[in-house]
Length: 205
Image: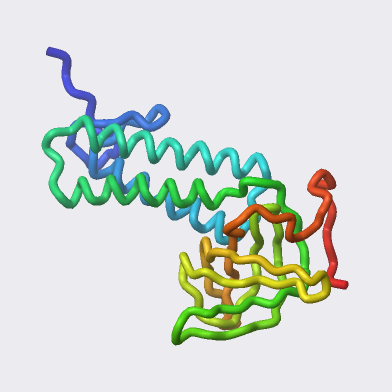
């Protein structure tokens, strides 16, 4: 019988269960590797600075995490409850990050908008501006507390446009405000932009 391939980690004596690229990893180190890659992707997405090439690399990394975790979850018969939970968490986290990758072209844009929340006990209205826009949503600055999944209303008073949107992600900033990713809940040409102009930078009027 051929000798089992060992984990590539020099300090580990366990047998490898997965091949990630050209690296063989045991279950524990596979889980650790996936979480490290997820954290790197999370930081890159939070910075919102990935180029088209960078986003493709992120997508491939996230897909690798998903495939490796899914294969181990369904092929191994001796998983502990904790291991199974971690592998499932990796799959869900990778899926969420993939969803956050832009679905359309983005433009840096400082457009005045009004956000409002009508959730009972958390009603507020705030005049702010966008940082980045896409056909499907935007990244906006927000001084109020919001949660992922919250439904908000966004308005462009000067254009007399309004739309319902959902909070897709939120990142706290040092000034106490947050960068909030919102996505429209219904198809709408909210920004009235020519998305074929890739390099356009939109300044506030």
